[in-house]
Length: 614
View (cartoon, rainbow, N blue to C red):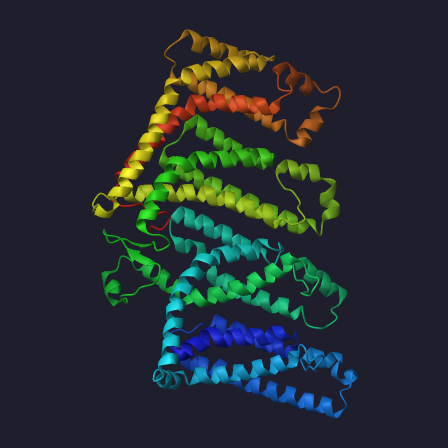
């Protein structure tokens, strides 16, 4: 355990510290050693190659650097502490330093770090002997036991936080070099949503680990004290490389730190990810199951029906409660969030989100169709986010061409922001909300189809609580349904009294509802369709480019819109009235059906596991 601790924690940390103490070629070698050691995380059968291909070269190089730097300090002292000798540019580039100030002797820190690297690597080579001796001393043995215990929890935390860190790498400083990380986050979210396998979030981890290593290397090379040509500087600025100094922006610092943290965390859990992928791929093989160790992984669990899943994020009871609550209340919240986003960022792309909400209100599809539709919506939102990312990155270099047509780009749905990371984060969170709906649906499908599962006696209190909540929701929906007729007649009357031909159509529906007690489904669907068409026309007129084009004098379309009653004031009030009318017609039925499905969910034999069924 002692050698493992030194190899996986202390040695890489010391090498990274040595690399960051001074931007130079010597420190670049330390960085390369850090990247290689992290990339070749300890595996079964790799220790012999690791010892002779990595650790011995690290020891030899660290000792040579220590002796060379010490000799350079002696020569500098003999020469009379001449600053001209110590500050030569080629000496700085190689990595030889002098003592600038005793308050912060960087060279002393560097020498101590190099010496610790050599000692640490030597202890790692003789880790077995060191471990046997260390176990004889209770203090060190207890320390290693505590480290081992903390390491298991650190692995779980790394797996949970790694997708978030990857997202921060992608959006903190948007650039071409960071774009693959954001695309990887989008692909992982779609995979997790469609397959309900938590490992889907790490679908591209092998490629991203290699790419992150090269990104760190090139970013470090750009920090070297060398005057790059103007062409190389333009290329570096174009791809997203930047100089790190005291005047750097916080977004650049956040991007660099999160990139290194992502590489370290991914290297730490890569063996466990490979193990989990292997176990999940061999779930149908009984022979393989017998050959596997009892402790498969810190994420793999097995249900009572024999199906493996990755369900250790939360306990079963918590998942059951969250699934029932989200299944009952989360869907209306998702529709509200999509509608709010559509109005706050009015554009053609946002109109697609509004069209989705309109289709849900009009058709209220089944769970299976809604599941497929949510998958398409998630892909649409993330494609829009990636397109916005590319637009903001390209805007900095093509602003002369883009700036002339900004109204067109904004009409499509692309905005330029000084710090686009916040907008991209909000757009990605909107995708997470849609993905959660799919994960809940997958959980419902999985456990409603598991007829042979045994019920758990520990969930009786949760079942009673869930049934009580569903009963309350059903009671409220029943009360609203009883007074829905009066509400609909009042709303139709308010809209019909406004001038315009389109409002005259509402008057026809007002007379139908007033004179008839039994309203057929076709009439209700026709009224909803009218509300949505009216709503869509008003929405399109709010887009700046369209409204500015209609405001031109002599426009025939402007006169037609005026006769229809679409160019009056109080547009926000019109939106609210139409939305309430459509909701009163359809959402009462939707609420009752959601309550019925939630009641079925409460009666399922096993607690639903949100997004963790394989």
